[in-house]
Length: 113
Length: 111
Image 1 (cartoon, rainbow over the protein chains, first blue to last red):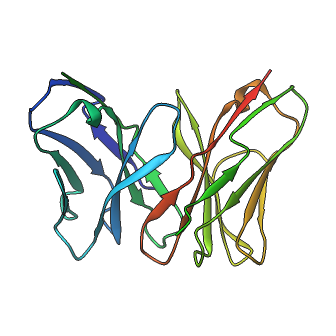
Image 2 (cartoon, each protein chain N blue to C red; image 1 turned 30 degrees about the vertical axis):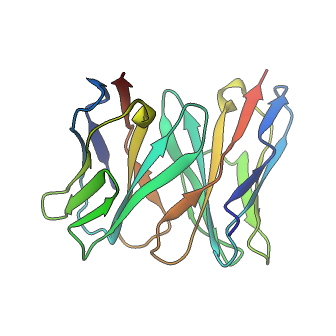
């Protein structure tokens, strides 16, 4: 059974800071890993999808890395902005198929102007 | 292209009633998954359907059921509602290993 841990649970930073969100998982036999953002009361917005053959993916100010051997992924946000305030979730597939993903509890980010 | 559409957006039901939620996936996506999100438990997997077949099911009581139609649209049903069923229900569609796209969710409140 896949278990996903996200650290820290909450983070408050001043605008402009670079920051790193961490995701660890127990079963490394995964085919991809996906990072999402969720605004209060809303659905999930996909940020980055990293395939198992890749080590990182970039989109704008976001960069996500994947180290399967150590069971870790990091989401790096450069030059944070107040609009980045949201909860960030990582989703990791259960091994043996792609019918189910397990989510971490998320990191709640607040960027202070 | 159109995203994942969930209807209705909000529902208020009374304990003991039943409810049906609907999800229309992205065109061409044949896999539809359902998740329940509560403040205390986070996102919990309910079930996944592919080509009208349930391939995986989470640890929820039998009151939670679902189905998928030939056009890939999916419904989930909760019977004999309990207060603890109040949650945001999220549907996601996917295509092979291309990741998940989520809908905006249905907020269910049981009173």
